[in-house]
Length: 165
Image (cartoon, rainbow, N blue to C red; front, side, top):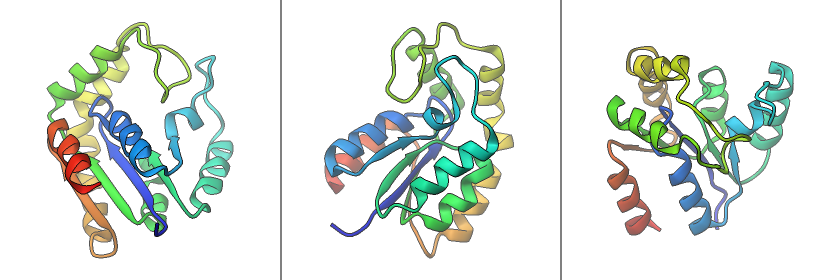
């Protein structure tokens, strides 16, 4: 298989991690969750330097799936990736997605969320105005050099996995 370096980006709750797991299971590519790199099990976070060091080590590998937005490092990841899957789903769907995982143990987070944090809810509500314009701007910039797929529903993502792999 040719080297694949895949970014999966989008709002929290959009279905990135579920898609990433299914993609890993179908392709055998190693999967890295940016949330797992940034967050410690005790709910603290690593330093910017430690995060960047771990991310650089992943980016240097020949193949990977990277799940997570983290706008600060998006340009660096876009430079290195071959493919991008962008989940641009309605805010209501994302809020529902996060709400449905409260109390569930997840592979992509080092702890179980016990409540829907109000600050996190606000981040999702603000995602369309605070994050989407920059994401689309970057995708347009890299579009002719990368394979970019935008999903507007989880059903589109599931269909892509069924038809394309």
